[in-house]
Amino acid sequence: MTTTSITNVIAAEARNVLQVYRRGQIVFERGSGTRLYTHEGRSYIDLISGVGVAALGHAHPGLADAIGAQARELLHTSNLFFHPLQAEVAARLSALTGLDRAFFCNSGTEAVEACLKFARRYWHAQGSPRGKFVALEHAFHGRTMGSLSVTWDDQYRAPFQPLIGDVTFVGADDPAGLLAAVTGQTAAVIAEPIQGEGGVRPLSLEMAAAITASCRATGALLIADEVQCGLGRTGRPVYSAALGLKPDLMALGKSLGAGVPIAAAMFSEKVAAKAAFGDHGSTYGGNLLACRAALVFLTELTESGLMSHVADMGRHAEGRLKALAARQPAVKDVRGAGLMWGIELDRPAADVVQAALDRGLLVNRTADTVIRLLPAYIITAEEFDAGIDILEDALAAVIEGAQK
Image (cartoon, rainbow, N blue to C red; front, side, top):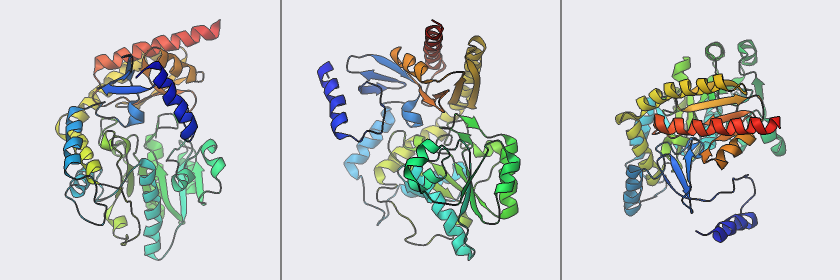
């Protein structure tokens, strides 16, 4: 690809693609492991992995072989018929989450939508409908209308009002406020065990205990949004368990297909038992290609030592990032688990993200002042350290520039 053709790609997007993404002015042509490459062969260390999606890295040989083999056999039949892979993926997800049944869809926001719908469906079937939800400040659950309704930030919500009503937001570290907000009219509490877009903020044990107590006292269901923090991202199957939470419903996505779109809403048997034929559906959800990809990922995660590798890397990352914070006064906080980390700065993070990009490193900004790291699960300590060296250089350059 020439420089002219890259310019043409960007110009064509400006003409024909809906302008809702503020993209870096780079066209990537290929990837390998934790690196991406431009047409000129310039290499970038990828510490964001497609926003937590490319869990097995880029161009994973086993995934590529499985996708190719499945494409030569059968891609899609719709959910009008059975195929042999959905039940296998569902069984593996049930073992990881402790929830009994899966509904397959294509994205995290769709998984959240299914959880919201079936929380209401559960109470309708009980003969005592409940329509209210309690969500947390700084929450991000997606951009479709239901998931947007339980997303906190007004910049996402305001242009699309009115959303679904009866949503109460409480402080993400306000146990008393949570206990007061959840009532006998609450269908469900929805929470991310680690808030992702909200700045990589793990829930406190006290907040988790309040969620558990409020649901037990009122009967409200608990929806755990593990789209970003689940399926091994923290070195655990799901992060809910680390907080003592026992969800009735759970949204999964991102890493599940390692780059192929697939997501799942998980249900306890008591909630699943209230579903009826025709209550929900997805044309593409859980097709053969997506399930084949998910099986490659889940096999690597649970049978090849990948989850323990993420846990080990989490300990390494924590030490490396805390050392960075000790050297750099601009770093206010480091928080996260496994391979999900936020570096909170004393200034907007956008300039640091751009400076890192200029130096060959991909990270992103969230919650304005937070640099987010979501590298591939396969990353090595050496690769991670090389990325953090670049990040520290980028941060120092931005600080120096601001002082001139």
